[in-house]
Length: 422
Image (cartoon, rainbow, N blue to C red; front, side):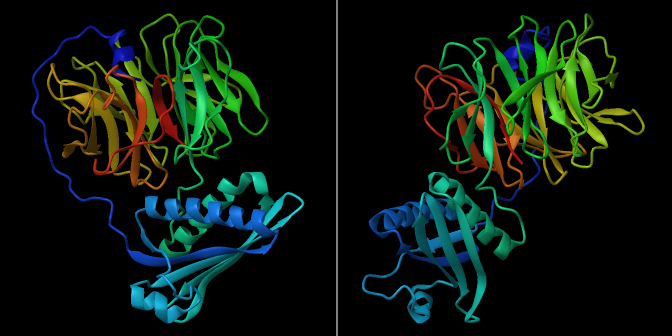
């Protein structure tokens, strides 16, 4: 939940606080130098060659964006198949590909060569509709990342978010690199707080399409929607459980907003908190045993953690304002938006689960809110008004230590509450 939205629910009771700075580190620099050969045309002539050029360009961007690779083009006059030429240029691996087109279907064969060992580290054949060539490039990039790191890549991932370019707040999807913008809803109403299911097939979100802020679910495979909760008052999406069987949410149901757990099979709701005040923005821990949330039980909103086994709640922040927690995929950290002092702009912070170490990741470059982890825990999506004379909110991505912030895409209108897909 953004600070503006939460402010509607809370009476401001600002207080001074110390800021504890502890963690360090950054996304590691390139671990491998990879020679990227031109992708030739096996069948399909000039059209296949153009497709090969496009696939290679997106693949190169994906590999660079992963931070694992430095890519090299062949030296002028060098044979891209010459391992010694690549090694002389400083490459440890080379990647080559061949493209064929047959009746609208694209086939790509790739080979990742370990130049030191003189053997193939990866050989793979891909085939799909040519119109989905960007998806094909992302798949190749993720396979290369997985082969060399043992970890899934993120080139295939998307961001779900809300945008108001139509005059209404609708739900959108966009590829992690800013391509493939797609509007999911056309309700002419207010959509809020999208949240991905663990299988990446569904997005929960809140919508005012029927007047009340009801909780909905969009099935992206079927192109269908259903209501999850239409209880009177707030029904705000929080986050899916790791097994996808339940969802934590903020619900008021005629009372003060508190945290509930919604069973997605029978749609029954169980209260997890019953505080006289405002509890909001719940997010599950990766093991599903704890829930982080924002609460004003100690004054201005702070981040708290609820142990679902014992029912105990502990506070992990003590700034002036904290909300929108997002638990890291690795379990050690919680992102949140907040401010250290009453007159500060909203910024992105990270706190460890003990509350011992807090670090500020953005530093007043506009207002920065709505943080969401990439599924590998190495990057953060957020919204910011930086660089916008009219204070337009745009989507940004940065490394997990706050370095290298970059706009995802120049999407018209205001964008908010990104949620990074599995």
